[in-house]
Image 1 (cartoon, protein in one colour):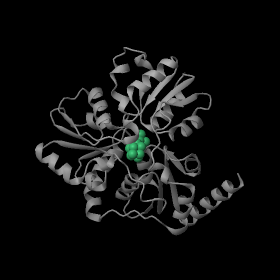
Image 2: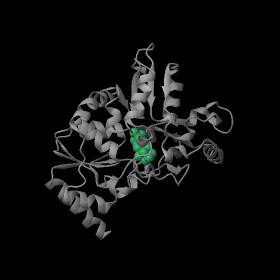
Image 3: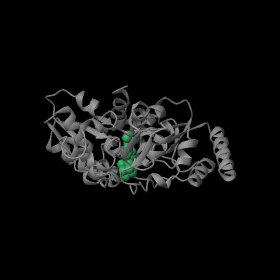
Image 4: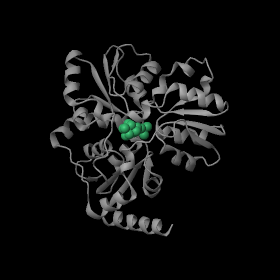
Length: 317
Ligand code: 13P
Ligand code: SF4
């Protein structure tokens, strides 16, 4: 406890000295979530990064998130405690692959999930996150073809909700969420018939016919497909006494804080993102002491990516 208090004090002191705002994604380890000025989902953190007065942003999350902050605020110093914190989903499409895909569908509107590199964002018309993907796709005139990337499960979810036929979906996935499957979820739900199910749309189970059809063990009204930020809002609103959570396990900490009276359980407690967990308390301290790792985005790429990211933070406000 004492060591933790000394660490927290030093982090706060150094953050003040650097005029830094500390942002943490909901999948970060509990100590990092608790010390941050703001903890939230990708969209909320992007909005805060864009509007903050601080001259430095310390992004406790993965690299594409820090890059997005830099694209929105090129004049600010953006730091990430460990630049090796990547994302398997962002790695599932390159700028070159996207250019080739666009060439096959001239005139299509390109919608990219925020889990992409700056190079891919520079080839994109509108970015989205899991919390506004449906609104973003719905904002595109119905007669225009859409290329949606890179997540196949989020893409399938958006397609189902919007009923859009002229939407092509890239076959990428996040290794953590793809591993949370429908059979496992249905088995857990059957054991706990009164629990709500909070499911992140990146999950392999998010489109599972096992419960979406209303057949089998799970009543459709128990199923809530939510971004990590919307899980926190729903936790405050639901009347359920227990909730099964299908997403990265870091989420459970924030949910317990938001609704201490509810029992939250992970559908798959091995669903841990090794990239998110690279941001350790020691790494955050080093980052603040040494001003490392600094995130740079080439000015030309950032300029081409900015409009798509700005549209993302404006839609669904
Ligand atoms: P959200 O926090 O936007 O729901 O994103 C989840 C995710 O996988 C980020 O890496
Ligand atoms: Fe990427 Fe998946 Fe980790 Fe999120 S949980 S950062 S999508 S690898």
